[in-house]
Image (spheres, rainbow, N blue to C red):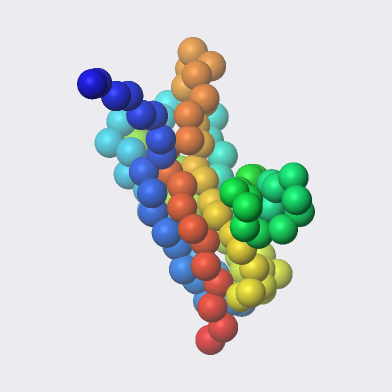
Length: 123
C-alpha cells in the first residue's frame, strides 16, 4: 500500500533561559518572494475530560515567542532565526513548548517545513 505524508522535518531546540538564540537555516532553494514565519508556542491540552490520559492529545496553544527572521542570502535559501535574551528569559524551564518554521510561497501555498520540541534549561 502506498502512503503519502507531508510533515515538517522534526528538529528539537534546547536553549538556556535568558540567553540569546540564533539558528541558521538553509532550505537549499530560493526564498525570494516568500513570506516566512517562526514561533515558539505552548502546547495546550486538547481533551474532552480536561486531563492527561484517556486519549488526551495536545494542540497549538498561545504563542510564547516569535522568532526574528533575518536574511543571510534569501536567493540561496538561507535565513537566521533568532530570539533575544528577554524572549528566552520569559520562557519557563517547566513549560511545555514546541516551535515551527513556516513559509508561504509566491503562489500563496503555506507549509510548515521545520518543527519540533522547544526546551528551555536554566544555566
